[in-house]
Image (tube, rainbow, N blue to C red; front, side):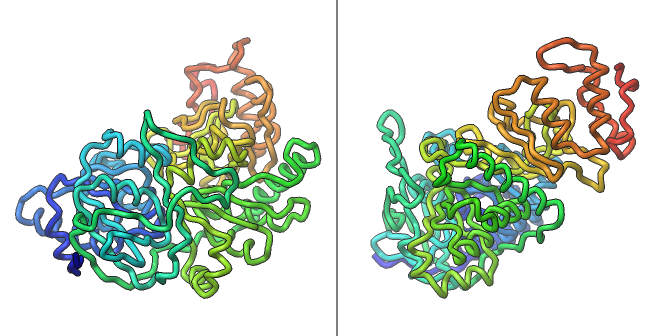
Length: 499
């Protein structure tokens, strides 16, 4: 059966108000690019006529502006899950004009199959190849594509000729059976394969193919600076000491790293530190620094969910695909982020915090406890199951007006029970095998910016509470309130909060 070629506008005409659509991609890598633009334009036309038009949007993680941004600006988002990073969508969410529910990324695919997210009307996925038998070779981001293709009523494919058909073989498409028939995931080292090269679907479900030739909308990350470089150096120093103390095997362990300039700085420091052996990665996002270290021979292998690299670096990969075929695997996020596999492999997780408190609880997602930034992403999948879980962040923000360390986090994504090490440009706080009071001393002494050390010590001293976890409930958010009222946490006066 020949699959018809259609236009993006024709594809958008099939989508109805309140339809739930699963989109491919994980970050802008592998995200569809023309169909959501056409859906957004249709939404605008319907709104001008006075008709409602919004769709439920389920993705792997964040996407490109042509998806999240276009739909947000058209006020076409009924709900969104699980993770986003687009400023227009963020504004839509934080003003209550779109429902948003955050989720651990490893749980999205299973939740869809269990029916927790309701009926999925459409799967819209990007591919570099597809045949009449229903074999789909996806592009640079796997995300939830295998599951949405399985459960959706109908499928639309964007066939993107920018990505070569020779990408086939870089993917490992493995979808677990659901309980009570689930088996272990047969991955025992990052390079193991558990599945197939393609997504296989019933070709009769494919409504049409839209041809495109567009690069991923991956923006370059900010360059590292003195602060991020120091954070990276502190991470490398900590891991080097752990090897010397025989608390990490001399052969080292797989690394999981978050995304952004801090992650690039960390990976750069690990690559430059010859006391750290060549290593492997079992992570979500493979970014520019990973490819560079792979070319230098410092990273042997990388397993991830997406190839989120700049246009120039992607060209390097495509120009030397035989080299990278032997060193890269892209998997569905329920496998790349699998808690089972993370614990089995003994990964070292390195993620970024928005803020932490003096007892080691971490907020990854919400500014001042109420405004969503991006979401928890996969940090929880890895942190809770890591051999060593590390969180990094600069000690201050907004030119020093905000301390990353406070008496109590305004929102908790990772409790003190999961956070083992905190690292800033100031130093390293090793929280393992320490009581809350000992953690407090470790964090204030080693991670807090000098401008805030005495403020936090005064809080502790003024609580007057001889308890397991010294907390003054009336003052616990005093630093947050001082920022809201005075614009600077350094202006905190604990007497205003009753201590």
